[in-house]
Amino acid sequence: MIEAVGANMLLASASGADLPGVNDFLPPEILFQGTPFAINRIILIRIVATILLLIILGITAARAKLIPGRWQGLIEYGMDFVRNSVVYETMGELRGKRYVPMITTLFFTIFFFNLFGVIPGANMAATATITMPLVFAIWVLVQYWVAACREKGLWGYIRDECFTPGVPWPVYILLAPIQLLELVIIRPASLTIRLFANMISGHLTVATCLAFAQFWMIESSNKMVGVPVGAAWFLGGIVMTLFEVFVAFLQAYVFSILATVYINLSYPEAE
Amino acid sequence: MTFAASKGINLFIPKVYDIVWSLIILAIVAVFFYKFFMPKFNAIFDERAEKIEGNIAKAKKAKEDADSAKKKYEDQLNHARVDASKITDNARSEATKIISDAHTRADKEAEQITSNAQRSIASQQQQAMVTLKSEVGTLATALAGKILGSKLQDSDVQSNMLDDMIDDLDKKTDNTK
Image (tube, rainbow over all chains, first blue to last red; front, side, top):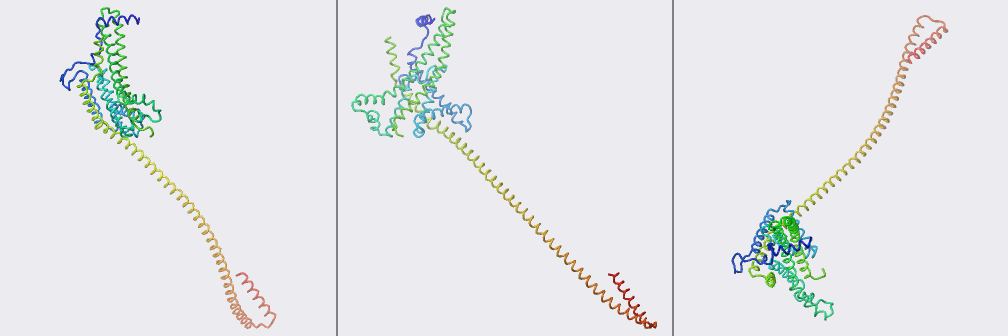
């Protein structure tokens, strides 16, 4: 059965199901073409997402009451989650207080942007180009370097990380470049690529399921086989959509907690 | 395949306008969170915490007040109880004293009355004796007159009469006594 479906899949893709591809993430510029303010489909989604985020949270904050309603309770639950489960759990309240607004910003923004991957009409996460996660990651990079310079001094930080005291000196030959690479490139790159790739794969999975559902149920000539197979693909699409909602949350959570951990690593060990 | 691969690498090359927009959006979102969203909610959280703490403090104070009032009342009640028993004791001893006083006074009065009565009886007796003696004298004189008047010769008769008279008198006084 699986083989048959596999074969049919190949056949289907060969005969023209509208499968998603890399081009989905490289849409043409539709406004201000050629200028530094050019807008393509994903950037448009991002702008709309930003406006919606500001409106929704802005209204929530403006109307915030002492005794919260359901919606305010949900938002407060999210803030509480970021503050306690992400920031304070990782770096403690004393250090963490300074970073609560930053991590809250990251969490809420990334989560909301990610959700656009499953919002009909958008079907593309607002974080689904390399740049948006990269900008977030660079913000984290700046924060943990600033924290390090403040707490240990620039040289102190580099010495602690790259020439860790207590390690025999020949190891430094290997350790120092790796650590330096880690501090400057790998941390932000891993943050960026993890989020970006998750959004890409999520879009590809959902879009593939729906494309095959469309192809089998509507375009296929053999309805006897096509409808059940297409229905299975459609069910898969629903499941993957729900999974994408989970991934949207999970990636926001992972990004926030890693940002917190990286910043916390800039502080001296001894409390 | 080479086409797809060359396209694929494009995914990882940030475009200038993408960087511009991403930075703008990050700046807007960050300013929104830092300047509006977080302070607003923190104010709400603080106010809520304050209110809850205030209520707890208020409740604590109310309880303390109630406790102190209760203690005061209990103290007062205890005082009152002690006072009451003291008053009862006093009253009881007072009553005993009054009764004993009354007893002694009554005894004294009774004694006095008795002695007064005795004295008056004695004086009356004396008076009676005096009167009697004087009457006896008068009677004797009268009798003597009578005797002298009715030519009594017989001394025996005379003495008999006198004796009778005195007997009579004695009987009379005994009767009056």
